[in-house]
Amino acid sequence: MNLDAALMTKQGQEELMEIHRANPAEMTPLKRAAKLSGMKQNKEFKQMLAEESKEDADMDSKGCTANVILFVPDSPGPQNVSGSLGTIFCANAGDSRSICGSQGKASALSLDHKPTHSKERTRIVKAGSFVNHEGRINGNLNLSRAIGDLMYKRNKRLTLKEQAITSFPDIKSMKVTAKTDFVVMGCDGIWEFHNN
Image (cartoon, rainbow, N blue to C red; front, side):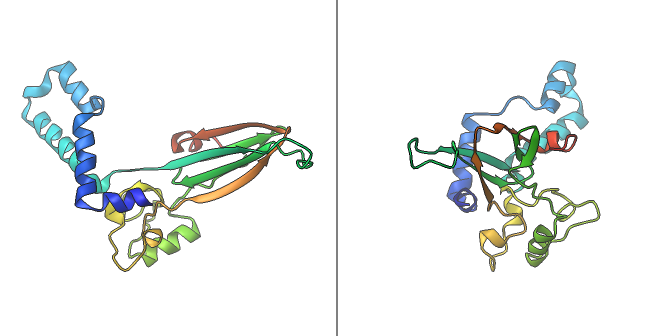
């Protein structure tokens, strides 16, 4: 949440833009198409490129999710009689997901933060936003937690945790034993087509 707070200051936004200018992202698909097709001279295409550049500069509408796994091994020795090898901690803010496989069964280590979930919708509405019939906040975002997306974090009466979009993660822990087979982390694009 400190990153969001920093991004809300003028200095934080200037630092981020400085990093962006010093390390420009790969050429966007639109710019690549212009280069390959020679369409740079087309008036409509120039306007599309200008709009894309304006969107790139608008940091209020940029954001990302975070799904983080931390494994903390147990101390070896006689005090560890439970058979535990350690603990997995999963912190999630957004619609990325982690699962753990044990003995042929997958269990969710995180929950997708979608505006349609009751807890998330309640916070969104209390913050002065709405969830439309497509499950999007103010008709735009289809996730309810993210780092950035500052335009959804401007309600001065609320803490960052209470905003329509919050970066505050859910944290879940799970013991790792010899029966634990794997952990898979994936973005929303994977989980929209595959279940646990």
